[in-house]
Length: 289
Ligand code: AMP
Image (tube, rainbow, N blue to C red):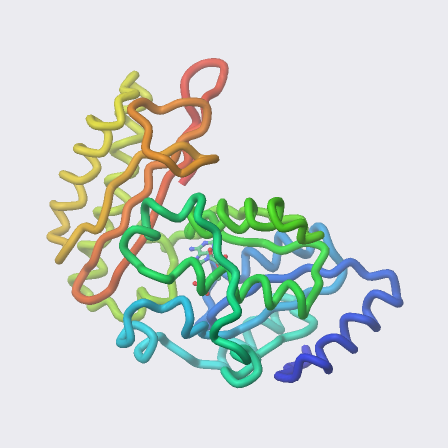
């Protein structure tokens, strides 16, 4: 695996890979890798021949200075994991390389008004801008994003469609710890008690699944039950428990063809997010989380 910071060098490597008819797969990350990140590479390998990963802690998408400052960083460990997972090219740009003009940005006004968009000002502008820049640099055929960050994944899919990026977006399943906590680089900040309490997020989604299986379709009842369950874990704050349409990310009164229950809650100063996709099937609903 080659580790490169320079944009022109990345372009040269990509050009060479293309010359040998390779299709380019790309997994953008902020590092401190875990199995969730590596599962995206696995999926990318099934569709493409040359794997590119980026690690860049994108200041522009942090609305909280401390969150940015304390974001876990451990590049050498990441490189070893990425190489083992089959990454061919690792792009690790620095801030000066990525931020040339702070007044140049990409933003979307759809899909971002609810969920995290309502609580993290400027977050999605930072995400759209960095992903656009990375797509322009790497020019991948395929890029894989995690369902874990559902609002990000759905709105990047939309951005790619609306702005005609020639990239296929794949949304990959959520990887979880043994007991069910969604893997996240930020989990590192949880102490033992918080980690145990955070499990109530997973339990709250299980609870919603049981309710849906027994015929409940009303968003109000589902979100109330999910919230109650999370509260058993004594979160320091719940930002939201929302039931939204998968395509529009607008709140719905009842679950429909494809719906998302999304949650964000703080345990200590660590903000965790999780979600479940609910798909209508011939008989009942399929819950994916
Ligand atoms: P991050 O490094 O947190 O910005 O995440 C990079 C990519 O990994 C994003 O597409 C995330 O959605 C995805 N990701 C993060 N956590 C998980 C997880 N537990 N399972 C699957 N994908 C994940």
